[in-house]
Length: 470
Image (cartoon, helix red, strand yellow):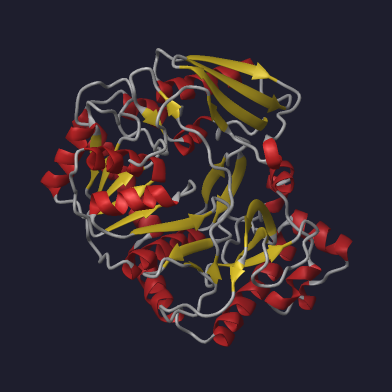
């Protein structure tokens, strides 16, 4: 835990709100403002451009990224030289198959060489653990941060959410220390007009307070993990209640059809699911017809086989993305483990951005705390992000009060790092949860080759309803 986080969590609620808004103001200045507004205006025009004009934009951006990567990234200079590729050979998107794939292991092992040299002014450091619990260290330049937020704002415009509308947020940040047992279980970000609701305090006893606060503030938009929002929706459905919203946005987990149905009934509005990656290479957002459109201006998406060969539209393959903006750590032909396909044809909405089928990713169990709170899996990945020595991990809930964490790690993951993981998990799972770290040589995949990062052996409703409906 950083010093800033310790100060925040040790502060009274009023001071936490001040600190949250101070942090939000820094984000506002760096990633929003006039630059973001101009980018949003352009995106709202470009999503109906003819396909040829969009491709020309991508080609231009790709040429610039390739030139920059070759000139400033030691990894790309060496890799392109070894492949016999010169930047002038890459004239556009059609030439991408000339380049080798960038794999997750490459990013883990060569992060420093992937990043470009020179000034890091305006760069933002980030990371991801993914569903394997194996973190990556990433860098983004300011343009990438601005474009990420502009694409996010565009999807909200598509859903009819205007500027300045308040949004209730249910994600994985610990905005309220998990050992707090009294309300409020939320904090207000007035800078960006967000009500940050804790995903770690949702239980049958506290959910009426969440509903009451959302009604009192007249929050008309929700955004968060499907499992967290579904927990709230299910609570309403069981009571035959409706909490009217204008739109609900979900991400970071698989959104199941039954979850969407329950949410739409409970909130009386459509649900818009979107797909994004911490690596900032692909962003896809739902239109009013609930097709996921790829943000072509943001990054280029290929569907490839395991060797990196593109597959025809309509056929499934691995989602492989190329950032068209990030000069800090260029991500070119970054292949993911997610499987999808490009939907052929045009969309009834009239937008020309290509459509992507729902991604086949790893649906996880949820973890049940001893006090009855259900913790979404993405909220637990934050405990692994600070430790790149973790090569693979799996969290197994064996009883209501015991969790075992299997870890495959390198030599940099020692006793202090192990204690750090336990501390961060205990913050999220509570002091009554016993947490055991088990070092293993490998963690095999399950039936059908699928890997589950979180496995629960405890009977509870979790993210999905039992058979028979909500």
